[in-house]
Length: 314
Image (tube, rainbow, N blue to C red; front, side, top):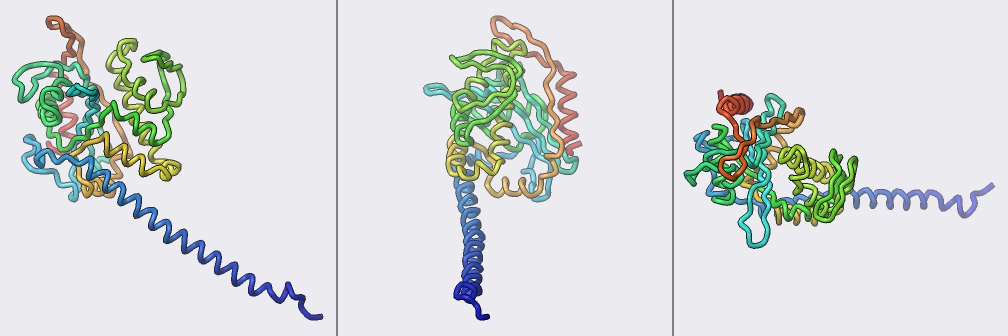
């Protein structure tokens, strides 16, 4: 019995199907490459917008620029700055990161904004967060260097007012709220909650209703930053990468170059294996009318020894 017309056409149909599959695979491979290149190009553009070399900063405590290609441990001062229209701004969040891939760890030190210390370049003692209002990033870095007696190699400044754009760009975030409260007309129940940009900003600003004071505020700020990092790392946000990079470029400034970021990404991955959070121990005290956070010399020495050891500078 001969083959039917439909049976005779089967080999041709299979060939056409294979061609379609090959075309789709080629499209996915080439298209994926174009997409990856597009992401790379947009990221490069965003980082160039973020980049502020600060006269090619070299820490006075180190004497020479840290060599990332040799995988030397380094430090970064993270400044969360509340910049509003008509205001020079102040650094409401100061977090020092020391990164050591050899010890496969990252030390994170939150510095209370009311810490009393000498403001380097101003010649007076004041709250450490006032350094930014007096002299911007450069004075903040110099003041933290003096306070802890360690080198500060890099900085990352985040405009907390504009951080809402970043939160919205990643489609909102989820955080675990430990304290039920209301602030700026918004309610934040206890437990796991979803926040948009405006809500995230209010969530980080509340301080006086929190029995932990500024420490509680710092915890919430770290939660927001961590939430953005977690959401930004998910595949679902890749389709919105252009908005994300634009928001980052608009609201973040750093003296890290694109090449330095790529070096850190490729050579320092092991440092993320262990993240250790530290706090500055002290006590509150009024001197005149202002309230300060007083840190004694013993505590400063403890922090100095901890960080110097982590930076392999002993």
